[in-house]
Image 1 (cartoon, one colour):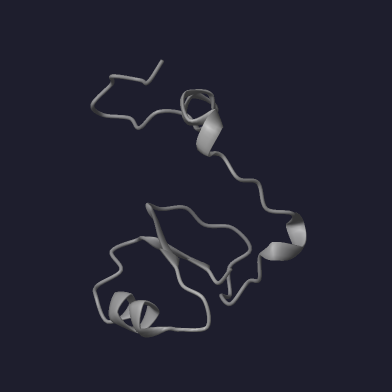
Image 2 (cartoon, rainbow, N blue to C red; image 1 turned 90 degrees about the horizontal axis):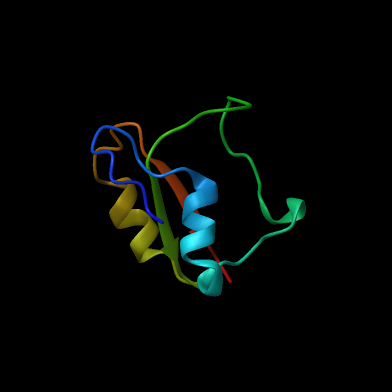
Length: 74
């Protein structure tokens, strides 16, 4: 059941339970760090693109405002 609390987003476990049929798990080798911080948090913005980066460039041209960009390069 999704959380209805307006001040706090649903927990990751709740989202996984609610959307199990859509869940994909990446192994630890799938992620590369391009920043100077070992940990961080923020709203996740995911871009799915394969061998093409105009969406990445367009997204990076917008203010980030604490968002975390995840690029799924396929």
